[in-house]
Image 1 (cartoon, rainbow, N blue to C red):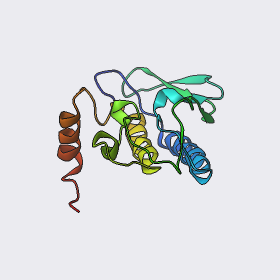
Image 2 (cartoon, rainbow, N blue to C red):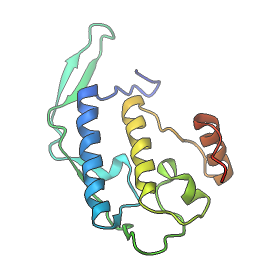
Image 3 (cartoon, helix red, strand yellow):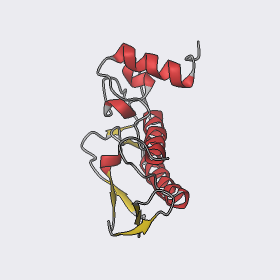
Amino acid sequence: MQDDNSYNPYPLDQLVHITYQLCHAVKFLHENQIIHTDLKPENMLFVNSRYDTIWSRRTGIGIKRIRNTEIRLIDFGSAVCDKQNNFGVVSTRPYRAPEVILNLDWNQTCDIWSIGCIVFEMYCGVQLFQGTDDDQEHLAMMDRILGPFPVG
């Protein structure tokens, strides 16, 4: 899928490998009672950013394919211990979990929510929840895209 922003998605095999590493890194953090709290594409770096350009006969444009999809997580400046009561705003807005927006006690699941948002973005080339600075509008977007929030 190519969007108006000329984004070319990662090939599925590369997306799977990147996602696996991201989940594995977050699993390590969570097993050690650490919540990253600011997972986003900018905090994932390729170990080696070399790429090949593959020309598409269908579109007539070159598509970049990363040679090595090995990644590292960075920016632990907002990371917190899972054992403490966690309230307040964390995460960059497009990757922010509903419990954070609602100012509820959040936990490791806020990282899992961010992973889902990141994978969607890497696959589609657009942020799942974009274009708002308002909490109510953000929650309404979630409701429109994912359906009603569970009650109870």
